[in-house]
Image (tube, rainbow, N blue to C red; front, side, top):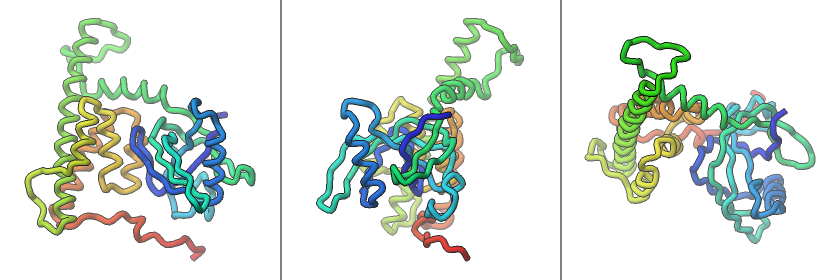
Length: 276
């Protein structure tokens, strides 16, 4: 049995550390906000789980568990502003990643709940494994169970250095990508010198020296498909997430430069599901 938390399905995944503003108007989610606000403000329970919708755009039209991806992220409530119509304007920030084990549907509470397991232990193990990816001992041999302090420090040093190179590569690619999107969106021909807007520059500065935060910023800001974003959220190792983003950004830059147009999110073309 996992922990039971409130669930808020959305059309795209949420990432740790990323700000998510929401306008709450549906009665069931108004009830969710009332339930969260009834909890102690000084506690740590004012959150709900965000999971991306896998098939279709209406979870209720299919089995909820089948309609949702299995890796999500908590949204921690930072600010709530009640509206005259009874709704809420809410600011949340992405918190912890979790794996969806089951979805609970009930009349009370009217919103979905999820049985989840937290991925902290998995993240720690995957980070350690990811740091050693592609690193080979000087002898060219991998000796299971070996504990040489000097060798361990050398591997750690190489890992830190290569992580820095990978982070700078993704940062540079993301800068070029943002500049290309901005130029094309403004009606330019693309291909100009990399230049990001002030807001993006501030965000990039804020994640300087934090490869994990950089990886989540890129995953949330790039115009990727839900499937691409979900695969990045599901990756527990920062190094592997950054490596995947390097490949994705190169692909997207090639498409932007070849097509000369900015992709439109598929959700813009979404229509209600039918039985046909």
